[in-house]
Every structure is written in structure tokens, then in C-alpha cells.
Length: 158
Image (cartoon, rainbow, N blue to C red; front, side, top):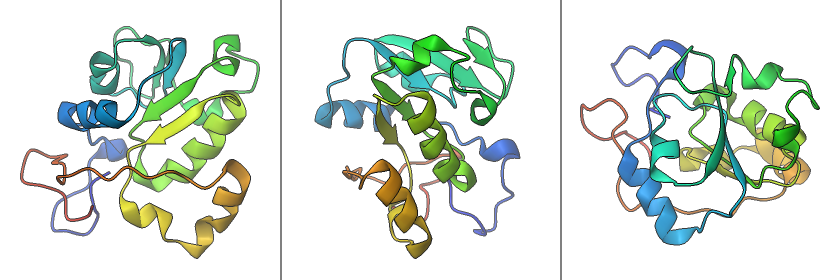
């Protein structure tokens, strides 16, 4: 989720791990349902570790204890039946692929709430009007502090 062109080299695969406190702040405003939750960009598993529920996890990197190693966006509907009954998709997707993850999650997990950690600027795009029409206008929860995704100070965007 880190901003681009700020003097730092972009990380491979946009791998900016979610700070645990961001997930804890989410839990102040949202109560996870009992049932399967999906984390398609599990990374180091910080979201999964903070939210104590039953998870189905995926990542493009071969990390331990994943349900799927590979590209979530390449999964064909019906491949993983547990996704069809998932109640929420909670993720910090690569910003450059966030719209694709939202659309893919809606197809693979049609009943699920979608909770994505993204910059506010993601909302303000005429280009994304079709996305909001297709999947519904988002509710927004703004973090009270800017996260640090690099460990070198906070991000430059809310």
C-alpha cells in the first residue's frame, strides 16, 4: 500500500506488510463473522494472526500454512468450494492490483464482505466508477494514524 515515487525503491510484488495495529483498529469498528474468512494476500500472516477466526489463505510466495500457493487472481470459480461460502475477504492487496482483487474476490466469494486496506485516494477515481457500480459503493473506515509499511516512517498518503 505504500505510495510510489517517494524516493524509495518499490518492493518486489508490492510486498508491504500490514502493521498489526491497523488490524486491531479495524476490530474496533468491525466484528468478524463466525465462518470462513479469506486472506488472498496473506504475506507474513499479520491479518490472520490478529483476527482469531477460521481462515482460507493464499499468497504468491510459498509460505508455510497456506491453503493455496499461487495467484489468487488466477483461481477459477468452483476450484475451492470453501471460497463460495466465505463470509469476509480481509486483505492488504498490492495497490496496483486492488481493483482486480476486489473483482476476483466478488466472483470467488459472492457472499463475502470485502475489507481492503487501501489509500483513500483509491476511492477518488472516475476510472473506478464501474467498480463501485459492479460491487457496490464502499463503506470507509479511516485509520487515525498513517501506517508505516517500510519501518522507515509513515506512508505519505492516508
